[in-house]
Amino acid sequence: MSYRVRAVATPALAVGLRLAGLPTDEANDAAAAADRVNALVQEPDLGILLIEQPLFDAIPAALRRELENRAVPIVVPVPRAAWGAVTDRAEAYILELLRRAIGYRVKLQ
Image (cartoon, rainbow, N blue to C red; front, side, top):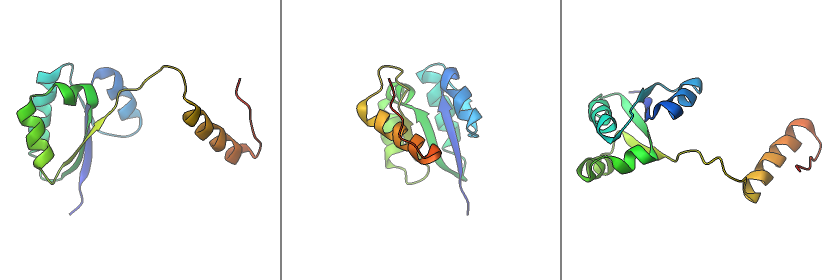
């Protein structure tokens, strides 16, 4: 049997997930997220359910425990993007990708 991947996210993140090719359900708050999650986990071919971390944290504790105890689907909370300062580790990773792509070391300023 093959399994599908779906996501539940706020409208802001849902756009990006759809652009990445993931079928995504939108939820503006914890109640909407809980409703969507309850419906999605009943689908027998759902293998992985991505859910935006703030929505996951806001759904009722009983539902979170139920999700953690299920073998399938695997529920993966996705952290919200942080648009703050770039860390040294992230910068090093990006520089290495650039070096491989263009063949030169680049210094970001």
